[in-house]
Length: 173
Image (cartoon, rainbow, N blue to C red; front, side, top):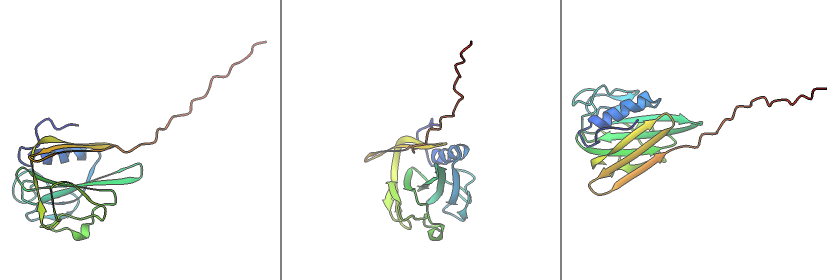
């Protein structure tokens, strides 16, 4: 599923990329509206500003998917306008470190877009791109005012070839 609209139209397209990820078997395991609510599961119900909205400054969510017994997680955080901070982890984000003002951290986290710290994030202004989360993949192609980020998560999934009975050659006598 590919975002048809450019990502730089408010957090609306970030939010709808998250909704499409949920529809493609990704789960929101942690989230915060950056305003009044945070915790396990999905507290985000819209792209608006206010309670449960992804349009608030410092709103974030963690998308998680287990593929071939390996966990993959992305933390998507917005400044409420056109800024994005995006982190990636295989070990998982720690819910004991998050609150309304800070996104969760992970010991192996990689910041793909943005910078700063979990408690004092800095955002990169998005000028275009795609966030796409499918059943067994994630594709991130984001253009900022200073650079272009391409990140593809495409784990190797073992090929299972079903065994089929082989024809038996019969000799007629």
